[in-house]
Image (cartoon, rainbow, N blue to C red; front, side):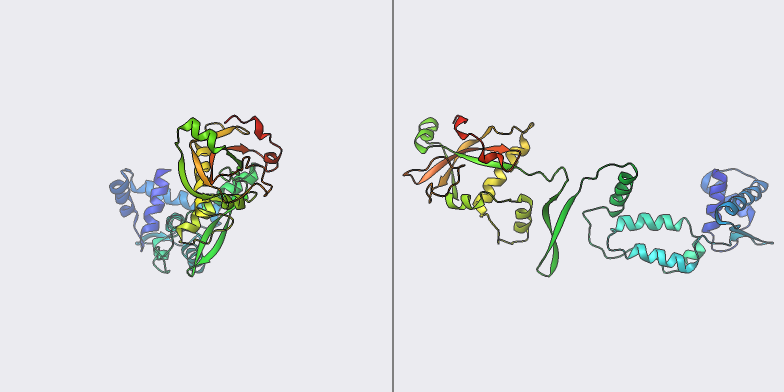
Amino acid sequence: MDRLYYTYLIIKESLDYIPAIEIKGQLEEKYRIKVDVKTVYQAIKNINELSKYIYQKEIIKTKHRKGYTINEEFFNDGQIQYLWDSILYNNDLDQKEVNILLTKLQTLSSNKQLSRIQNQTIRQNDIRNYDLLLNMTTIIKAINEKKNIYFKYVNYEIKRNRLVEISNIHGNHQDNKEFYISFVLGKMADVMQILDNKLMHSSIIMSELKKACGKRISIDAVEIKLKIDDLCLHNITLPVYALLKKCFNMIKEEKNINYEQLIRFEKPIDINAQCDNRGGYNVFQYYGETSSFPLVGFVMFNGKDVPYKYDYNKIKL
């Protein structure tokens, strides 16, 4: 089989007729395959017999006293040019994917044909953060094997005259996790006695934290906005975002997710109190004549309705 393949390759790469004796020499010099001229003749005969089954025609042409050349291409010039351009200028392919596909296309064409068409391989292209061909292969395999596919949506916004990818909370990707949490406050007097005045000070205001309650907050979406210097955040302020990010990181560090259990901060976080207890938010347990509250930790739930049914009195601070 090596003799057949490399004999075909030598003829395919030749821009003109190539005699059998030269094919023999290249087989020995380039590929360390020692043959005689009769073996070259037989290899070419076998290639043509095989091509009759695949292409319904002989692909190698013989010319007396000149040698051999590729007579019939797998694609005609118009077909190969169309396929080449379709790959090269496909905006969903990055340069690496383009090179892989064009290399495979080249194996089906002779160098003589490639010299006739416009066959540039480099283009200006953005770096993609996805692999189109890998995604298509994965989807096709999943369909054939009747398996589910994990995926996540993305949204796009126009910022400064360019398209920016924005994270989307929809989809069923395993990284697309939602956490339902309730913050737990302690009485300042009790906490200060236990911790000997050790608190983590913050600029979080209670009213801002209450505005985020009951809202679906995407940490990824906020981070993308901050990266592009977009400070127009919805339902959340920067101090509250920093708090939620801290909670999110603590959850990720947990080996096992423990629902309906208090997850403590290393130090209670000082929350500035500029509201009272008339808002109807049962997650904030203690209000009184004080200027701040210690945020002790949070409780995580696996459903959005569970926090409202949870008995917070069983939490031991």
